[in-house]
Every structure is written in structure tokens, then in C-alpha cells.
Amino acid sequence: MTDNWIKSSYSQSNGGECIEWAPAHAARSGVVPVRDSKDPQGPTLTFDPAAWNAFVAGVKAGDFGA
Image (cartoon, rainbow, N blue to C red; front, side, top):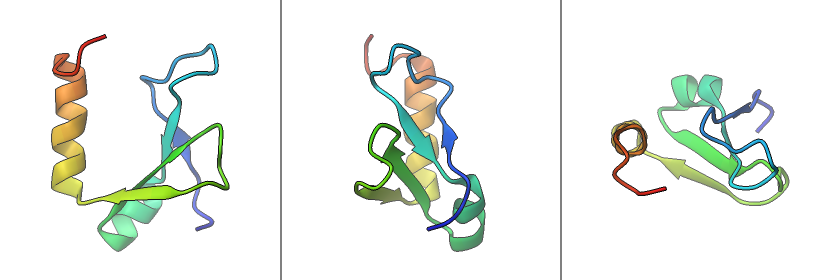
């Protein structure tokens, strides 16, 4: 996958808990790819857009704790 990856705005600046996603790939393929920004050659998880949107809404609502 050669799309541009964007780091989550919720990722911490201290080098931990960093994820990235590729919005252009998501728009084109209908799946949302997510990876660990510290391991860009590592595995990529893919999510159905509705499931990803529900997850993001839960993060924003604080459903998963601190």
C-alpha cells in the first residue's frame, strides 16, 4: 500500500500509543487500514468504515478510559 498515512490526532507525542491510517485508501477501497506508526512495515489491520466510525466516536466520547 503506497498511500499517505496520517498519524492519529489522539496519538501521544512521547513515542507511545501511535497509530496511523490511510484515508485515500479507505475512500478508494471501502476499508479503513490502520497500523502502528512505530512499525510501518508491520501488519496492517483493516476495518469496515461503519465499525471504524463507531470506534472513533467511542474514543472521542471517552468510552475506553484514559
